[in-house]
Amino acid sequence: MAAPIYECLKNHRKRNRVPFHMPGHKGRLAGGELERAAFLDVTELPDTGSLFDDLGPTREAEELAARYFGTARTLFSAGGSTLCIQAMLRLCAPLGGTVICSRVMHRSAVNAMALLGIDPVYLYPDSSAGPYFAGRVTPESVERALREHPDARAIYVTSPDYYGVMSDIRGICTCADRYGVPVIVDNAHGAHLYPLDPALHPVRQGAAMSADSAHKTLPVLTGGAFLQIGRAEYASQAKAAMALFGSTSPSYLILQSLDRCREWLCGGGEAAVHAAAERGRTLRRAAEGLGFLQPEGLCDPFHIALSGANLSHGGAQSGELLRALGVEPEYAAEDGIILLLSAATEDCDCEILLRALEKIPVTAHNRRADSTLPHPQKAMDLRTALLSPGEVVPVAQGEGRIAAQVECPCPPAIPVVMPGERIDRECVHALKKFGVAKIKVVK
Image 1 (cartoon, helix red, strand yellow):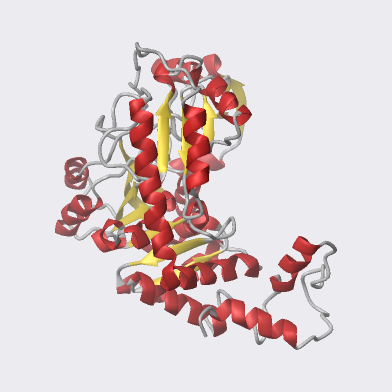
Image 2 (tube, rainbow, N blue to C red):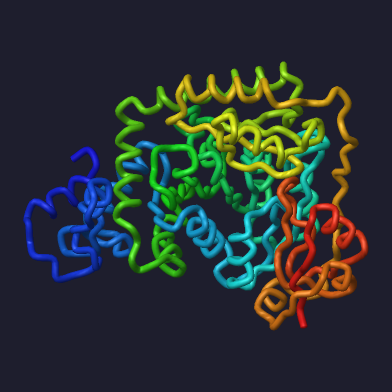
């Protein structure tokens, strides 16, 4: 059976039983596309299995995925990388404790740490990506943090980041191994790295676990992700950790798309991933030739990140021009534009994008970059700050108060202030610069 979940759903429908069970549409949504989707949208039944019971076709599909990826276990998530991140943190720090984290961190990780009572120690990225982008977490910074925090339960790193900037995961893992501390990676933007080159995947570089948002760059429905487990000691409890946070009604549409994606990769899909990566490299070279500023150093080829620093009309207006020319960017705001390729990107798509980029004016002289961000001080633990009663105030009135939420302008995708940190004058200045008018603070 090549795709166990998909085949199981097809066989279930062939039985043609009268559906006195969820979902409410009973597989009878009107309209061709909706009807085809409803055909595969069922609930947990004896013959369809259950995601968190770890039995039946889902278990078989996950075992096939683990075999393909070469992991101790690969688990399916219908709750995106958010659910995978929650599970990774639960597995490493089930009762809280210290976790050393990249300051480039998704909001879901902050919320999960608050719920689990984790005390994060933040590592600010270096400047190796250039002055207009978030940089990288280095093995040296991890080494220093581990010396200062011998009680650390894990190292949490985001790589690639939103711009495609990749950190030295192998070097970080080598360092962490000397201290006996696991490395977990938010690899949400790098689900395609294994089929592109297995050596690039975090688990193959020594990470204990990684969260891979398959729906971002592979042919998977939105919300589909893989939890990749590299170390066997985490495998037996991983399903329970996901169940703690996950919905008891996971989407079978998403699950079967993960299953079929693995089948597609095994059957020749890797060639499409390689072709898309080459298209990305070609576009990056073309953008450089047109004068666009991009991240420096090792970057994921599926990401084309353009700094707004030398866009004549800024990122927001340039993004609107791209849309008028038939291109919808992943992100476009005053400070930059992000264009995201996938395994489904074709040559004709790249040709349209390149013609559009040729019409985006750039300046010969770059606006001076101000990449300095504040380093606010912790005044309250993360959990208390995030869960305490709060109030929303104008940013200027927030000085001296304790933040009750993450404020993370993007770019540069580095939070200016985290829950529990005291908002100082530098924070206020940075928030205003990024256009943040109000902020939630602890009452």
